[in-house]
Image 1 (spheres, one colour):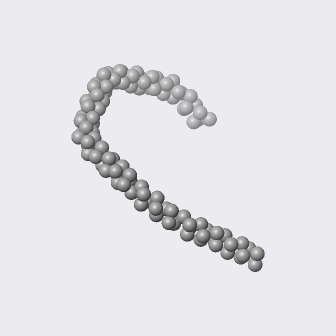
Image 2: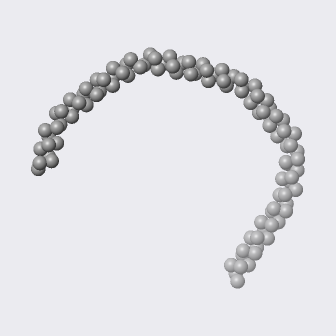
Length: 104
């Protein structure tokens, strides 16, 4: 019974609080409507201004990436050849050990 009464009291408190807040919330939304509309319009205007620049930026970035790839490719190719040779050497050295372990 005590728990039921406590829940009822809490419900009443929340109900009164929401009744008090609702008109204030509506007033705040109404008062800030012009600012929100201006902000939305400004964001949309910026989006329209940036859209053509976005494609230009993509083209410039793509060009730079291709240049970087062309500069780095010889180094990476050489590195991969050396690493493959090293891995083959390691495999060759470990082959007798692996064979011995399998036999044991």
